[in-house]
Amino acid sequence: MRPIIAIFRKEFKGFLFNPNFLLVCALMATLLSFLYPISLRSFQDQARNAMMFAHNSGGQQLNIHYGVFLKHLSYLNLMLILVVPALTMRLFAEEKKMKTFDLLLTSPITSAQIVIGKYLAALAAIFVIMLLAFLYPLSTAYFAKINWGPLVVAFLGIFLVAAVYAAMSLFCSSLTESAIVAFAMAVLFNISIWFVGVGVEVVDSSTARSVFEHISLNQHLTAMVEGTVRSSTLIFFGSAIFLFGFLSERVIESSRWR
Image 1 (tube, rainbow, N blue to C red):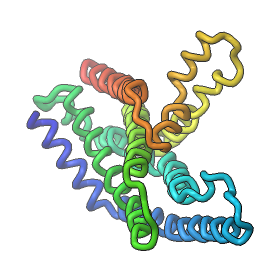
Image 2 (cartoon, one colour; image 1 turned 120 degrees about the vertical axis):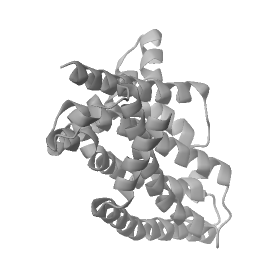
Image 3 (cartoon, rainbow, N blue to C red; image 1 turned 180 degrees about the vertical axis):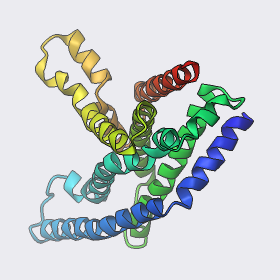
């Protein structure tokens, strides 16, 4: 456990005191500060029009969770597709380029401990970004009534998606010594995973549909952003994270033997 904590502390400090990380946080805050008020004004206009014409405009449009917060989370998810690879691309690739990777392999620490320590550091950095994004709905509580349960579950869903991004990005970083190549591969992986469940719409077999629904990231995230936590969803995210973590460990272990 101590080697994992040591690697975690080293990498997490590297994130926090890295100017690039601070720049990424500043850019995300700038974009969200521009987009979030637009969503609020749009929601306000919808509510005002509904009151003027004295009819319900569809329920979900007048619900701040659907009208504002889910838009905010969708913007956050789009940013994370690029931000997570940008943060994690150096975790292994830079060490290989700087020739410190060989020193890490010869140290008394297992490949699994190396991967877990670096992955936990990436999750901690993502958690900081998620806290930054959570400040916007939190500020809305001053003038609107918020149902915190669905909102927290929705943020948890985006965090789990980001955790999958991090696992895939870590795997890509372990394959190369070029941070740019690792970034490009990770972005491609992050985008591709959204198309895995497309088979739900094109297959006729009920069995095949059930399989595609289970491996569809969109299906699982949709349930969570609506405030529902299912065991199948947690199993899916956990399996995806374990798969790419295991692949990363195998790559590191093969490098040790070579």
